[in-house]
Length: 114
Image 1: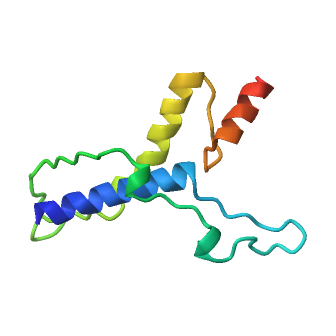
Image 2 (image 1 turned 60 degrees about the vertical axis):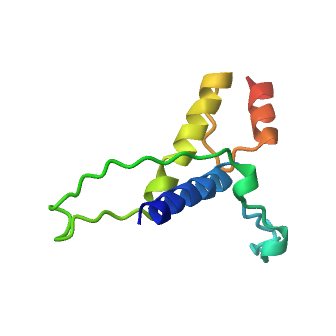
């Protein structure tokens, strides 16, 4: 099902955007416990946070993977998102951001330390 596969890829990319730019676990330095231990205060990306994502496939079965030639999609859309965003930021400001999430305050701090 091409549409379901495309939806899985774009959804994974949105998840990657959230992981790269928003999602952060804050841990209390004294107790070692999570500060926000529920989803009410946890920020993650939704479709409104992402651009329209166009997905295209190369429909070429690979018989070496399995007898049907099917390929998994679950991780493919999320894997390259963080490096792509980090490289775009590097190209824009000339600084490597290596700590996720990459937030505006971290970018400003890095620019001020330059």
